[in-house]
Length: 155
Image (cartoon, rainbow, N blue to C red; front, side, top):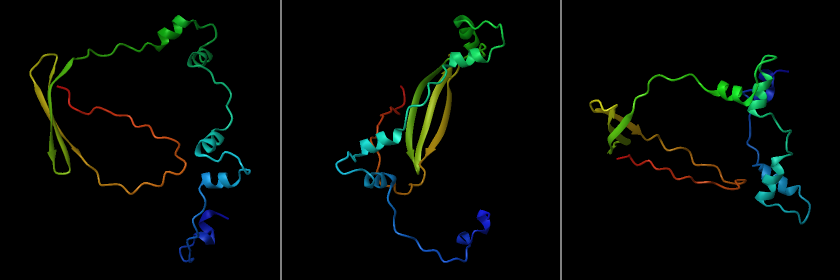
């Protein structure tokens, strides 16, 4: 029987929402013996599973892809990893960056020079999106790492 012909998926079938089921964490807790550690840390440790087999290093993988008799020395590997020279780059210096609040976001204006040539100005708008739906509860989250970032314009 295909999923399309399953009468449970029929749009004419009256469906009722059942009661809320247990989360995976709650289910796991209910299956632990009396006195066992049922903390979130213990659950996360349980979820890790067994350590897998050791894989190849990138160097070992690279060696396995070389034709028979090819130079597979460390030096040959390092040379193979060196890319082709890029096009002549140019040095960009940001002379000034300003931000201005606008309706629904922020306008960023940057003045910069390329290799000391005449100043160029670019402006772009960073618009705020619509607020998202409220988040789910945090059951099962062991930790959250907050990483500060500096978004102030360089002067």
